[in-house]
Structure formats: C-alpha cells, structure tokens
View 1: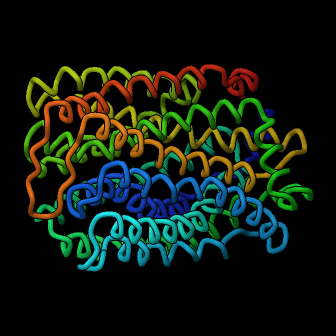
View 2: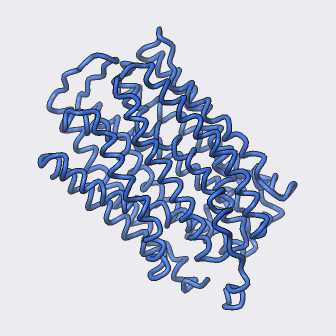
View 3: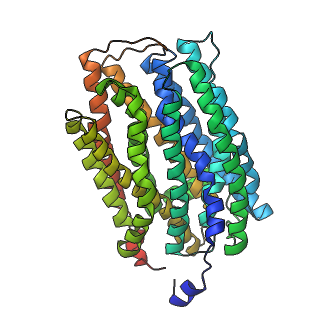
Length: 449
C-alpha cells in the first residue's frame, strides 16, 4: 500500500469501535463459562465419568468444525445479496438461553444421561454462537482499512473480550461456590442478560463501522461451494500456517482454563480460589492489549505473536515449580501468562484480515470463507483442550463425584492433573510457535500499511 493510499484509508471512530467490540462481552461469556466450568460441572457435580465428560465436550465442537465453514460461505452469499452480514448475527441474541438450558439439568439426571443433556444444549449453543461469531469476526476483513487500523479494530475487540472473559471468569466461579445444581442455573441466568444486550449493541456497531469505513464485497465466486471456499483458504500458505498455529494456541489456552478449577481444588485444596486465578490471568490482559498494539507498530504482529507464545511456554513450565511453593507464586506466574494471552488473541486475530487483504490483492476475496475456517479451527481448539485434560485425568485414575460429595483422589490423579496443567500446555504452545515461525506475510509486505 502506498503512502497516499494509507492517508486516504478511513479510520473508524472510537464510538463505533466500542459498539462493535461490545459483542465480545457476551461472546466472552460463552467462551469462558463452558471452557472454565463445564468439565468440572460434569465430573464433580453431575457425577459423569471423566472419559464420558470429555466426549460430551468434544463431540459438539467436532460438529462445529463442519458448521463454521458452512456459515462462512452462507455469510458471503448474504453479503453479496444484501451488502451486509448482520442478519445472521441475530442468532447471538438467543445464545444466552441455550447456556441457561445447558446448566439447568433436570433433577433426575446424573451420569451419562446428564452428559447427553449437556452435550445436546452445547450443540444448540454452538450453532447459535457460529451464526453470530462468523459474520462478527469477518467485519474487520470487510472494512476498507489498512494494516495498523485492522490491529486497532481488534485491539478494541480484544479489550472488550478480555473484560467479558474477566467478568465471567471471576463471577461464574463465585456464583457457584455452593456447588449445588441450582447455583449453576442462577449463574447462567444472570450472565444470559449480558449476552443478549451485548449482541444487540454489536449489531448496531457493525452497521456503524461498515457505514463509515466502507464494505468490501466478497468475490463473485465465493459462497457458491463450501468445499471450494475451504480449498481456497487452505491453499493460502500463510493463512494455513496461521490457522495451524492458532489450533495449538487455542487448544493450549482452553486446556489451561478447563484445568484451573482442578488445580485450585486438588493442589491448593480450595475451589474458591479458581476466581482468584482467573482474575489474575485476565486482569493484566485488560491493560496489556494497548501495550501489545504499541509493540505491533514497532516490530510487527508476527514477532509480537511469537513473543507471546514464548512467554506462555515459560509460564507453563514455571507453574510446575510454583505448585510446590504456594498460591502467591502461582498467581504471579498466571498474571504473566495473562499478559501473554492478550498478545495471543490480538496478534492472531488481527492477522486474519491481513491474509484476507493479501488474497483480495490477488483477486481471491472470500472473507466469510476465511473466517469460517478460522472460527472452525478456534472451535476445534476449545474442544481438544478440555478433552486432552480429561484424558490426563483418566490416565491418572481421577474419581468423579456428585454435588455434596468429596471424592478422595489417588496420588496418580493429582500428579496427572498437575502435569496436564503445566507440561502439556508447554509442549502444545511450542508446536504453535513452530507453525507460526513459518508465516511470512509480514515480511513479504515489508510491514507496509
């Protein structure tokens, strides 16, 4: 992009960006609460065996891998026909109701029947989430803006997302400290209100952004065939490396969140400090987003992402040591990992519209198709992470229980849940770094804006 083009590129107002980013408050609730509490809810409240609980979380997300590209292609067709993608986003308004149903398991259901109830509503919720998330995250790719402005858009989105993650990550565990089923219903009902309001505000924000910054229509051939759209996206080498890296990144961070309640209860023998750990993880991320944007302007997104991933690797290893040193040491490490988490989200997501813009220059604009592949990968990571952790629990001989019970865990289970929380994430994030190092779009563009 030339200097003249950069000057001419539109700049979004803070008001429209804030309205757009408000959608991430509610979406942050959906990402956080099931990721943080659902595995624990199944094994320690509903008495579901760890292996069955892992499958109850994995299968709905596997379905997502198919659904998200379908939604992405349909979104491209809708964008060409109507000039916007907002109609699909109405599904997000119903998402809160699905979460309430998921955590309101009938009193007579325990064990595997309870897992089936949760999994069924998890599928419904994920479908509604896809309807909102795919067109929502395609918005920065649709806008006629430049390299740094795309980072700015995602910085706002990251700030609001982190606030949503923080609020849900602290409030949800605090609301269910009693451990009764009814506590989980109350928690989901209160957070449902946030999800509905945020979705409605976001739809208005998307309209304000596209009105002020322009709307890039998808290519004529996009949206006609889901498989063709996926092939085009997957054939893009830089996008493919970014996707594979984020698959392992998302797997790592969602394993981390699923493991936190177990780490708090069985290592420090206090389930109540789950909220402390989540606050320590996400509070620094709120202030770190703008700082990472400064880093992006100086060294580029690619280097910033690799630094963030490296910090997460080191932090995961250090948690293995601090688990023997006390809560304070672990909290300090988790806080550093929270700063890295902000970078993981900001850089990875803001690089997606960079890949779309590069494809646009080559005449291959398929923003919805690219975003569908990206969010399918994100969904897969959110499933694989908790599933891998549940597998670690199974290998360690973890004993499930129902609300009010206090199961005695063998030493092998304690060792497995600690290793699953520390060593496994370090290895997964190292693989993410290996893929990310092969991304070349920043260098090829010379960080042009």
